[in-house]
Image 1 (tube, rainbow over the protein chains, first blue to last red):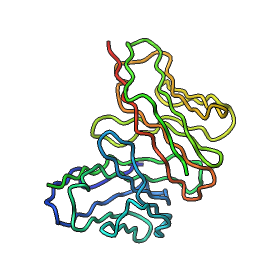
Image 2 (image 1 turned 120 degrees about the horizontal axis):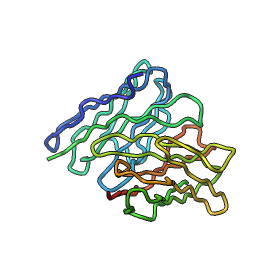
Image 3 (image 1 turned 90 degrees about the vertical axis):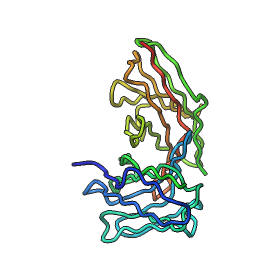
Length: 114
Length: 115
């Protein structure tokens, strides 16, 4: 068990560019979550996958954001036409299928939009 | 809707003294409650959880937390703090009725343990 991994760890981009982040969950975990964390705040829920199905999206996830989890394994989060307000830490978490399990978090991808 | 309040932005404690980090919550149903710790430029690390049963739960690194339903609280405690406990602590809640299991996190409490 190598834990949840995320790539890249840091991304600096210019406003208006597109960026894509990758998350590899713990192998037997069928639930995958994306959160966004800004300075001084706790993580905020963005979206959730059970296997390959995206089952819930937060209002925070504007139409510039899209997430996929093909084949129920790794997941990608894409942000199109980035804005300075998108600068944040993007966290991925995974968990087992039953409802009382804790979520295991990756190290995060820190996005800076200049 | 669910929410979490961590009333203290920062807690300062001397090494060896007891540490308490406060958390209160609001959910429409019954809660699952969690504590996580975050070190600089790192993801969140799970400490402990309350699901059901004994109100006092024990977790990693000597931490424990007490679930108090009447006060809707889930305070994190450690009898004797270490300098290495200095970090950012998050309380999280999820409603048992939420099938998707998403967490609502508090804003976090910075713990500073001085030698």
